[in-house]
Amino acid sequence: MPKLDFSAINKSSAKSYHAQKNMIKNIGKGRTVLCPTCQQVLTLCVSANNTTGVSCVQGCTSISLEVEA
Ligand SMILES: [Zn+2]
Image (cartoon, rainbow, N blue to C red):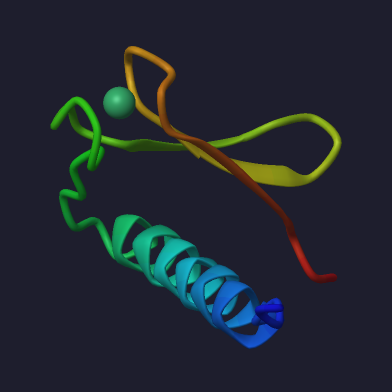
């Protein structure tokens, strides 16, 4: 009976978390970052409840991060 390997899942989600953080960091620096799905430019937006979000025109990438006070 095969054992489930959760370490691989955790590893990939941690990796994508860092990738998302880097993405937002680069956009914050004024760099152009493209959506990995549709290749459109990702834009940074801050909503009224202090949530920073990154999204593309088509909406296939929609990342939101809470801003640390
Ligand atoms: Zn997209």
